[in-house]
Length: 396
Image (cartoon, rainbow, N blue to C red):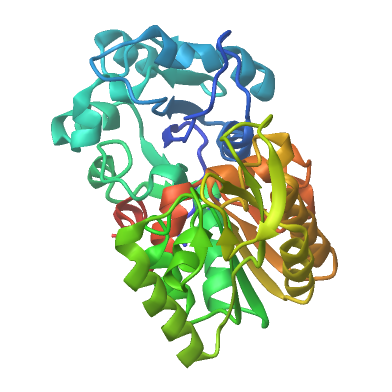
């Protein structure tokens, strides 16, 4: 694999595509530093070699040019502290000022460029825009796995201007290695846990996983599409009625392949989408009208925990319920604890997807699982078997 370990950066300027698309509160303080923490080793390696670093990223989805709430300047206090240095900041990513700052960058210095998505050319994959970014540095490092499934200017197009000096950073290398370990070096039994709101988001990964897993646990809002497809009454629970046939096809394929699909048999239901709503535990296949399922029940927690603790490879993508509301968090907490428990017994566990990562962090278990992925959509597409343009651009 073409990683930064193949290059001595002494005297070289490296432009790194990082994924600093982090959540900010109303005071512009970072509320989850997972992605920033992940990028630090790559930056430090280049600085330790005697190189200098230019960081580029997007933040949020600005619609019409610069917006203060999406400015990367809000990340400077955290980055200064993490890198123990005062970063330089270019208030525009391709301006003359950015070029001057890059030209004068000294060994050991770090320059942060303003939000790439203040230019529409970034998401359009504009070659001229990519070339202006490329002209700032000697080496291109892609360390933004979370955007590797996008053929954007800074993730893919820029690589063509570095035919012999383009490499993966540690985040990218570790993500690829971790997913390949799950898919290609699988220790049996292999259990995949899929949750979240919609089946439509997970069809591709389910289809691919049916070729590999022994157990497939389904929770979250997506479980009700399967329950309705199986003839259950789901009350006012979330459902994708256009995917009922697809759900039955998945159940049929799983049976043919000998994959055990685990659908929650009981559910915590509420009469309103609120933490303060009236709630009760009922059978998942017999939910009354006016009630909606917002978490898995106690029997499901117990049976899922047993499956997980007896697994040797575990993939978890998506929560079991609306874990942001404390009264509907027990299912997700149980899964998180079980994954950590299985890992302590020697299982390999990969956690991916924003909500799953948030849950692992909420329960302070990030260091109790094997790997926490920083890329939700990218991880899903990679696991579906799709070719990611950000990866291909480095390998070409």
